[in-house]
Length: 415
Image (cartoon, rainbow, N blue to C red):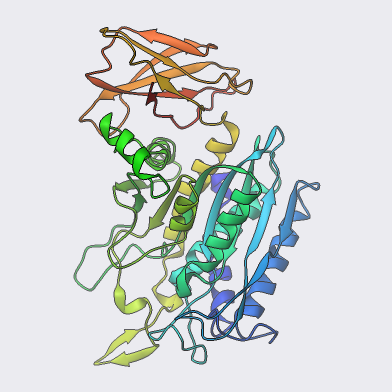
């Protein structure tokens, strides 16, 4: 599957998105050739062509709402996302999302007249969502995968917030969201070395959705580094760094870059695990800039600065993570650590999931280590006692399918 990802198709998709002139959220929504409406309709049309090969498993929708005026939206504006949903064959309510934003901007976020190419930010992310939708449409995942292109990001994450809240209101079990935003080039400012096989992954620590009491509980047991997002990040690092992707995934343990924010934040706010992929070193002359030349330096987010082989490799990272997530059992639920007695052994329990037909594994590491290091297979049980002191190590529990795929770990709460 991963080798089907095509740099040439990435090139064609980004070129087409750039051809709409501007994709500002404030731009024309009815012109068939220029503006965000034309881009929306083209993306939806392409996604529907992919869905036609899915034997009815993939459907495409354009959910929309009217955003009332805000500081970055002077008039009531329709915000439309494009979402292709590949329904899971066994657990359709368990969902994984991959997303990029198809709106673009120039220096002034209110300027919807001038050309705003948005090749890297975020034509590159949209190209990954679309290419993975094309390839996955002919396969059958056990869980549901949603391939999204959202709008309103540059104005304030409006499209992703609408999507995340809609999924939350519908009671969907979103167990992972991958946000691809500015993933088009391994090159930074002039003079910095290229990093063609590196991608940054921003991973939140303490969940922004937790209450003060929940944060206090997490801190009291030393779980600041074991949020659901951190477990998703560890999972991605484990499954997506290999000879096929050829990529090194660098986990950055903060929600996002300073002074910036992406659509994964909307999912984190809704209580869903989410991470953001961004190229290793950014060239800010090619982001949020009017297209112009100053002292011989080209400004603007132009396609000539995109490396399509690099975008394809980032697509493989996403594809490896998504398929591994959707084919594995879900992340274990109600995982608890018994702290009711003084003992040098540790007893963990969880809710037994029929999908975990390969059993469960208890993971552990020393408390100052960043990644899981040791694995104890415990079989198809709902609790287990291990001969390790809970005072000294951190534990996690993951589910295993009889197909060999394994879920992200769940961190146990003390009880």
